[in-house]
Length: 308
Image 1: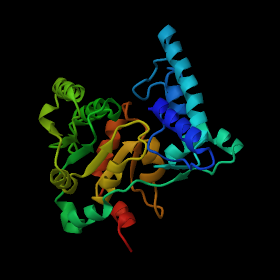
Image 2: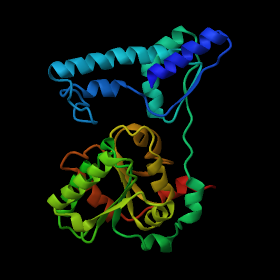
Image 3: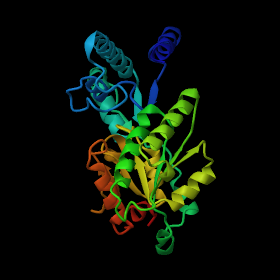
Image 4: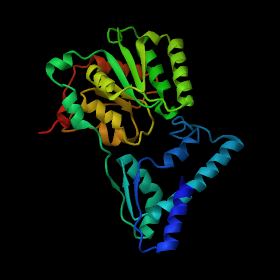
């Protein structure tokens, strides 16, 4: 991808001249980031996070680390050449600035800015009723809307849910976990199969539902029925699904990182709009889920998203 973009950039400059072409980029997710580099080191703060966590060990790991460092340099050089840079979140902006910023300043380029991606908030407000009576009808269900990709960390959600169900508290009684996501290829299908096996091993299969390639109407139905929306991905670049949770009136319980932390699950007018959990992979995770279900349902997230 990078080599193709670089060849196009060189061709444009050779044919039309450097002053005639203005390059613009909308960065959805940094190809490489400082967090990714640090995650290779198992002793670092991020050494247990992400799909490449702790893989910097040994000769292979050293080679991988060197390759990433060289790639980061090339990525910085190419990024510095772009005239206008937009990112989809504050988290992405911070990482792009840390990687591209110094070289862009030396070349006199503009400062990158954040332009949030479009989310169907208005459609959700019309489709999902949020009133005192409708809130009472919500079910004891946790909803996770995410493609069945490795980085979405469904294993973490299943293990955390199993831990919560094992408490046998009133909050856990008859609670369900609803997993909705698209399946792109055979590897995703295999991943879903492995998740089903894991749910069986954790003895929660009767409380977990898989909805593959669901239609928008089915997603809307669950957004109106569930009580909690979860996201287990480390460094989710923005989190459109989390915004959809909030627009539909769900309490968001998300990983304490990335876009959800920086832009979405934040306090507004002194009131919370969800829960940030740093202990998704620790024993405290189930306690947080229990607290969410025993909290009196509040309207802060809905009020923040409603038009005045």
